[in-house]
Length: 223
Image 1 (cartoon, rainbow, N blue to C red):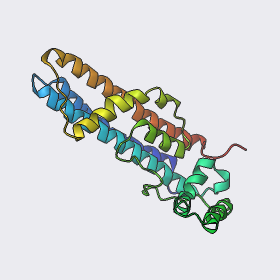
Image 2: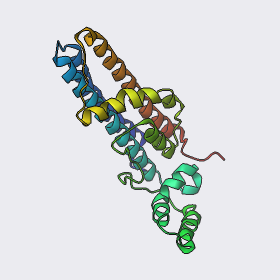
Image 3: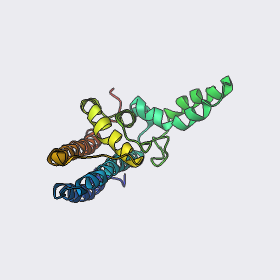
Image 4: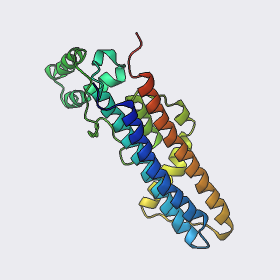
């Protein structure tokens, strides 16, 4: 009997995203109430915090989903290809360092053996789930593929993610100045609020996709 139930997965994801939303709501209010020259500083802080919760939630949620799958005791041959790839990714990585045919044969051997093994991966291993401390759209897309999740809805937002969140966060992290003129204060507040809504929406979408995959068992291959 699996200990990591769907209800437990739901509870973990709900609690994790809830505390992030509460903290980000405080940050958003701080920006909205900012006056004069402090606006620029508060928006810089807000963008960094928004990114931190974006990366943090995607990483935690992805790893919790894999913990759930580990506990399901599913044979790899019953799962979709991406999960089989995850299960032997360490071997693929290690073999890639060699040019020897004998070494590459380990991949063949692992593929053949994996059919009769239960799906088990180490969710904390960066080779399995890695946000690269820079969760841009290409990095997110790879995580979605690894988990067997649809990424078309995120693709519509890829420029928004990369330019409005990642590029700005990276600029701030490297000490670049985001200067806001006095006549742009209201517009800057509005732009952050829109960014906040979009990123929260994508975090919600990711959570919903994971729960949908767990409930409908979409990680299993189609017979």
